[in-house]
Image (cartoon, rainbow, N blue to C red; front, side, top):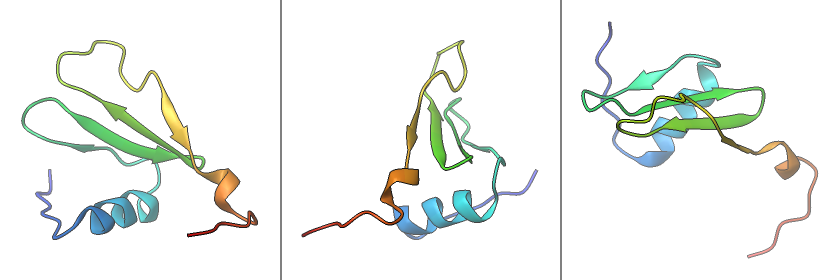
Length: 66
């Protein structure tokens, strides 16, 4: 098992996207993964792992404003 340390949330998100379907986990039981344009998160003590996720596919080709 490789230990990773990110300098920013952006680095963590980029790693997840670049390492499709790989799971990041911490020593507390939280887990993150990115599969098929969807981010998944499992919190501490939850048994239904990766029950829900957040899709990001709609961001492609969509006009965004700031």
